[in-house]
Each structure stands twice: as structure tokens, then as C-alpha cells.
Length: 227
Image (cartoon, rainbow, N blue to C red; front, side):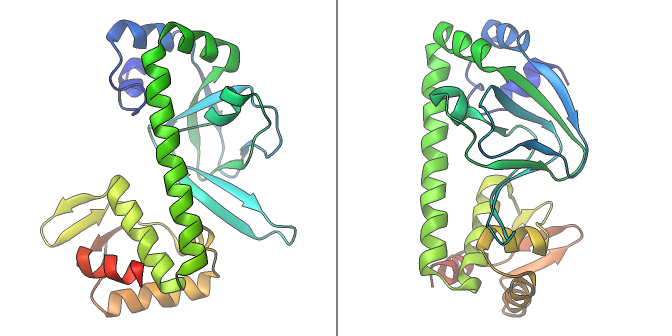
């Protein structure tokens, strides 16, 4: 896939002209990371912007006891590192490769210069940042107000909204998150998440389909997530 085609699939770049994308593609560099590699660490200088070309990464923080809290899982077409590029402050979280990952990187000086030449992209970036802030607010609210079953249901609904496909019988998440990933996302142990998933399946809200997960009753699961 051409670099410009990859960029066109990213929300903040999707409405740019072909020439804008060509200009941006010239500034990008490709980087490879092996599974388990730390791509950026909290408090690192914010000198690069990243686009996930292939693979999956997790954005996490670690407690003093080593407990992992996952803020998000990012896949092909997602981006990260934009906050430090805009405010010049150190990184606010760690980003770790979930498998072998191919990234496109952009230096801060090149990115700022490119945004100055293309102000419409700046507005799209702001819209995406606002969406992420809203998602963070929802996640904080879920951790504070919902029990584990509700938090798991809410996270599955979020995944369905972001990457699910409507199929006969419900919404299919093509690659279901592991119990370890869900545990990090909802702030619970893997064993507790396993019990919550079993209960949601027993009650007919979800059904495993190969490597995917089918959400069978969107309205009922939404009510469970709000409970």
C-alpha cells in the first residue's frame, strides 16, 4: 500500500488533497519494533509523531506496584504521540508493541511546519483530540461508577463502535481482545474479567466466533454497560 493511501485512511488526514498527502508522505520515515518493545516511555521528550502502519500497540501506565492500566489499544491507521508534539512537554504514557509493529514516524519540527502550511489538518487534529478526551472522560466515569461487569460491557461496546462490523445477528468484532488486555482496560484482574465474560456469554449478550466476538444484543448490552 502506498504511503499516501495509508495516510488517507487516518481520520485527521482523510479529507486532505492528494498534494497535501504527497507533501506529508515525503516527511515520514518507517520504523520497525519487535513484540514487547517499548516505543515511547512516560516522561520521554516528545520529538516524534507516530502512525501505526501495521500491527497493534497499547498505551499504558504502570503503578508503583507494577500494575498495568491500559488506556487504549491502537491498530492499523491509528496514531499516537500528538500531544507532546503540540505542547512540547514530555510523554504522558508508555506505548508498547503488542506484536511486531511497523510505524510511520514524523519529527516534531517537520510536523509543526507542515501544520502551519495546512491549517485545515490542524482543525481535524483538534477534533480527534477532543474525541479522545471524551473517551478518556467516559473511561474515568466507568472506573468510578460501574462494577466490573458494567465496565467490561462498556469496553466491548466501545470496541464495537470503533471497529465492529454489522452482520446478521449483531455486531462482529473481528479480533476480540484478550482477557489480559480487557483486564488492563477495565482495571480488574484477569480472573474477574474471565468471570464477567462468561456471565455475559451465558446471558446471551456475546458469542465467540473464531478469533472474533459477536455482540448479540446491542441494546441489552448497552443497558448492562450503564448498570
